Length: 211
Length: 220
Image (cartoon, rainbow over the protein chains, first blue to last red):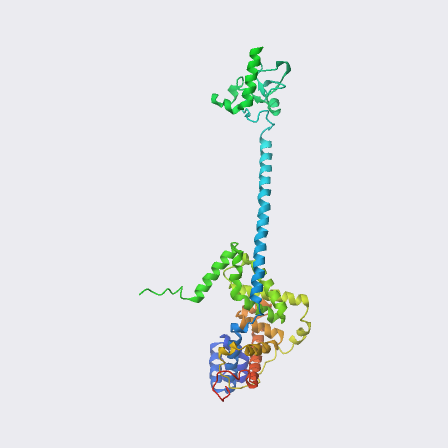
């Protein structure tokens, strides 16, 4: 409870700022109101302080140098452009870097899963069901590997025997005729072996006939 | 007759919604909208910087730096704060750092230790009446008010500007300046009373002599 006698001019001046903020206890506020109502000096202090707050709180009091807004806008625009181009340049770098990383990762994965020799025929497909330790025959100038005794082997003088795994590692592809049962190729899949392999076979057949 | 659209007819609500929309769009990367977002506050940002640095060139530089910092950190802004308060706090922080860096405050700091705890008694008891806002249209009035403000010691000026010009509340002012709420209240009281005395003197010196009061009579 506020002692009415304590609310003299000095007390009002001391609390006037809090009073205007609405930050005084209701009892004190009533006592101050009562005092101010009868005191010219405190009325003057209250009204003057109100004027100060109102005048300085007006946005017109915030004067800025000529061209300030324009300069600020220009700098922010430059910054926005730089920020965007930084992102563009990052993204321009990121795309090829990510692509290279993907390709490298893909190749590495492929290498880890399969033996990937350069095929002697780019149209040929790798055989997946041929036992890797199966003995097969290749000849030096040909592109196919064959089951021993295949009648389409050409250049028999230069043939050699090796495992299917070794043949594939060297890039040979399976003969469609003698190794058909190991291949997932339909008859129509002759095309899958490609023109070179077929030519190779045809060549072998002709040579075989020639022999 | 159609019901008036209360929400659309409320400029403050419209402004807030538009501001929130702009903030969200800038946060999503529409950088070019940032100036539109901060333009309503560009004067307040400059005034806050000037209150601390007291140099127009430095204040403009800091205002720009503060805006750039706000742009760089816009994704950290959370809707629970007022955007204007957030912006002013960044500005105050930037200005305080600039001042510390340039060590221009040494002499003022000595003065700052005086008088804070003692009460300030008003000196002029002229019979005030409301000064119309139209008076601020006159450049010389604004100039006089700015000069009066500039005469205050730094610690009073800063608190006054943040609270009464920038409209931060007491707590926000305390946080921005790194001082206690009690100090803000004490300094604010003194700043307001000192400015009141200075403006009262202005009445007597004729600052407002061409204001539209009754002809031939003083306003008190």
